[in-house]
Length: 195
Image 1 (cartoon, rainbow, N blue to C red):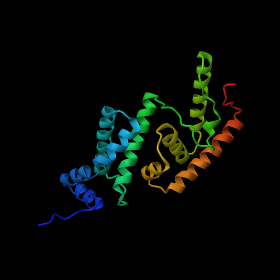
Image 2: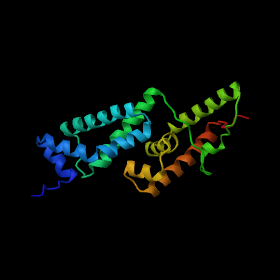
Image 3: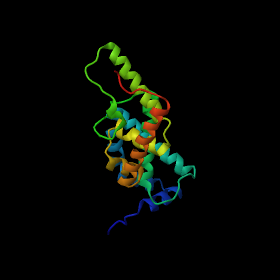
Image 4: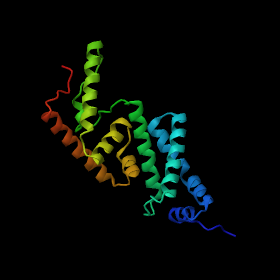
């Protein structure tokens, strides 16, 4: 006899109705994808395991608290929780991975960064700090895409999947973010070069 295959939506409803095994099924179904995404972002297995557990604890609290928004999109929802926890972790640790600058239309590409002496290193860190402060002025959706692209080194396809948006929407948000960053640089009269 074949066991029926329940949708994520069915399993969430069953869990809300008191069936703890339904959540175990959701966990088994999505654990590899969620853990892989967290590990990809933090690049530290122990930290990824902690954040993975925190993700599902938060999911349980949200569902049990009656705050789960029934849209039938459990995986994008749980991925968003994981992503937010990773961002919170980076903020707490004030950990800023290296910024990529391989796009020709990228505001970061205007920053020259070669072999530096101590003074140039201080200036470079100041520039990165200025750019990071400017990112905080962006609208939330644009800021999120910039952080995932430049600080987590995610592709636009990965960003689109994580945010549950189309690749074109992710590209559009990045385009507007870069335009807004350029305006902010001009408005605040910030120089993004060490020379």
